[in-house]
Amino acid sequence: MAKRWTNDLGPQDVTPKSLYLDRRRIIAGIAGIGLAGMAGGAAGASTDLTPNDWKSITSYNNFYEFGTGKDDPAKHAHRLTTAPWSITIDGMVERPGAYALGEILSKMTIEERIYRFRCVEAWSMVVPWNGFELADLLQMVGVRPEAKYVAFETLLRPEEMRGQKFPVLEWPYVEGLRLDEAMHPLTLMATGIYGRTIPNQNGAPIRLVVPWKYGFKSIKSIVRITLTDRRPPTSWNKANGREYGFFSNVNPEVDHPRWSQATERPIGGGLFARRQPTLMFNGYQREVAALYEGMDLKRNY
Image (cartoon, rainbow, N blue to C red; front, side, top):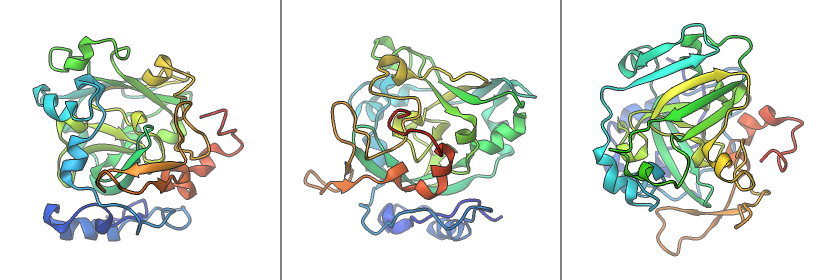
């Protein structure tokens, strides 16, 4: 089956060969990627990217539901029960309901997508996700014409997610996208990394991945998706709207109030890894810039 997005990243940008699971299948999948109606491939050269291995991706991340340290998710997320799992899809949809994850996956096309990942804290990785386009799920449930936004909600289970016992944020974690962002072919619902089931600390059993936005927009362990005609609240915007806007597109020209966003630190290159320039929209400008045509991206950060 032909893919719908052209990737400029390859296995050499992600990891040593020793960590590949069925490398031939992954390469074949990437070679077949193509996005109808979209000019060219993904923007930005990939030759300067520092490889990321399984350990880096799964042991250095933010998931405040398990603690605020970078290694807290890997230490504590094993307590999370991820089966059975269902997602309630409601609001302005034709077929609302609680959908078992297995039922959803049986109807989706799982693909391998190697994406850049950029944290608002000015560090970056390259991650090989496995998942399906969010657009396919929304089409399955039927989006009503009046819907303009998609809201997401993370599991609330403090007995297993120890960080939820502390008021670091208002729980449960919530996020949102404009409908056209949600329907974009790059927007992924990830269920795996490197062909393996996604680890708990990375958002098991299913998370959002929006590669042109800062990482906190890619909400983890999703239990609810709501279609609405109003811009939904988002956790970091509620906590500090001055620092974390609704859109949170990667933009090297708009600094965080407390640090520059012009460069980033690649994870996996050691303590003295050279910082690299941050790309507009995290390198996906060609694909997504049209979504924001006419918008002031400094005001709408």
